[in-house]
Length: 337
Ligand SMILES: O=C(Nc1ccc2c(c1)CNCC2)c1ccc(F)cc1
Image 1 (tube, rainbow, N blue to C red):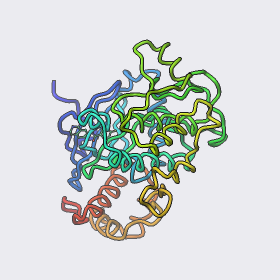
Image 2 (image 1 turned 90 degrees about the vertical axis):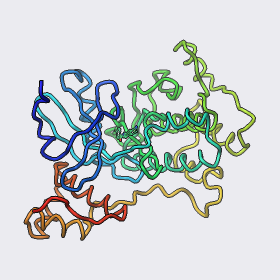
Image 3 (image 1 turned 60 degrees about the vertical axis):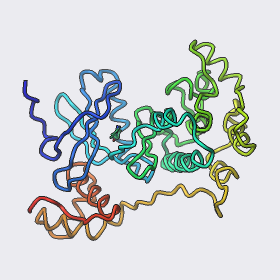
C-alpha cells in the first residue's frame, strides 16, 4: 500500500525513522528548499485520543520558546488524521543514552551540561512555563554536542503566572518532587528545581538518588528525601544537590539563586546567562534577501509575511536559513525561484 499523500512531502523529503515514543514516531527529513536536516514528529490523532490536548499545549509552548538550549519548532502541519511537528535535528540522541554509555560523567562535563539545562529552564520560567517532566530522556544532543530541551507535552503555563499553584500530578516518578507526588498544590518552578537536582545527581552518579521497583516504596524514599552520596562527588556538588533536593519546597534553592551557585559559576566571572541568543523581532537581512528573491516578493512584504510566524513553510524556511548562516554555510535556497 503506497504511503498516502500528505502535504508534508511538498516541503520535506522524509527519510528513516529515528525514534518512536508513546504516541509519536520521529523521522529524519530534509527540507527541500534549504537542504537542512530536520526531525519530523508524526502523531496519529486517533491514537492520541484523550492526549490530543497535550499536543496542542506542546505546540503553543514551542512556538513561544526560542532559545539556544530549547529544541526549535519550525513548522506544524495537520491533516484530518495526523499532526506533523517539524523540529530541530538533534543527532546526538538522548542525554540518557549518553550517560549510560559513559557510566557517569566527570564533574567538569556534568557542569557544562548542567549550565545549559539551568539556562533553558530559567528561560522557560521567565516566559511563564514550567516543564514538569525534566529528565535525561527529554534532553537531546545536537551535532555540536549542545543540549536541547524537548517534550513540552506536560508543561504548564499557569493562568495566574508562575506564582500560581498547580495541582495535576505528572511527569516521571523518579524525577517528581515530593509535593507533586504528595498531591499537594505546588509551584511548577519549585518542582522543576527538584527534577533538575535529580538530573544533576544522575549525571554525576550514573544512577538515581531515589529508586525502587515498587512505586509506593519509591514515593516513600522521595518524601523522606534521603539519598546516598558517593565518595567521588566533590563537596561543592554535594552542597548543590543538597539545596536542590530539599523536601520542603520553601527551603529549596530557587532558579535565580541556582544561576549563581558557586559550583555552577566555578571559573566564571558572573552568573549563568540564561537569556535567549535569538531575537525574533529583528529579521535577518540575508534571509530576507534570499527569501524575497525566491518567493518573488518585495523585502518589506517578505518581512511582514515572516513576522506573522504562521509556522508554515515560510517560518521553517526562515529559521532553517538562519541555521545555515549560523553554521557558516551560505544563506541560500537550493531550489531555483
Ligand atoms: O533529532 C532528533 N532525534 C535524533 C536524530 C538523529 C539521530 C538520533 C536521534 C539518534 N540516533 C542517531 C541519529 C529529535 C529531535 C527532536 C525531537 F523532539 C525528537 C527527536
